Length: 228
Image (tube, rainbow, N blue to C red; front, side, top):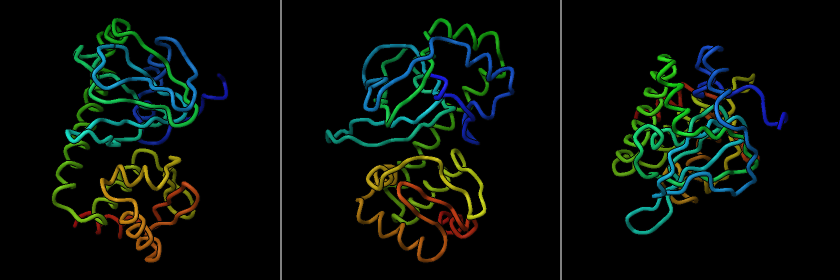
């Protein structure tokens, strides 16, 4: 399991915590190794534990009213998942599936709540994290109904870069192993449409792309597109 540990992406929940609080949170629960495709949480179930991701990343999906599977988000190492049900005891609102090998600490509800009660800074950070996820979900619902695909794509890329980006000489590389269908799912558009929008950004020198890799080359121009 030692190979699963390491630095957390800039902007992730754990990366933003003070070192002592981060160490305390990483001492909770049981450290486990999960295989690709393993379902950690299932939509509608009544479990109440939380996970602290320490390596790899997961996909968050939910079923639409029409019965389709929608990709809601990607969560990478350094993030909490399942904390909402652990806090309010309500059924899970989404399914979380491992995308590749994942290392995570499984934290029982009682232990999670005790820790938050004794660490006000972490409790506040958890509240802010939940609020941020709700804002993300709200923005995406609004965007899907009122914004063209290139604007939605620009906003998703900027938010992924802010959460999981690593600055380099060529720009900010988004540290997630995303396929084009997965990116299209996050944007909420057909894969060919997202592919054309991404190609337009690449030809304009706004982003760089490689195999499952995207680099934000010109953040200012991408922000101009995102502003609509």
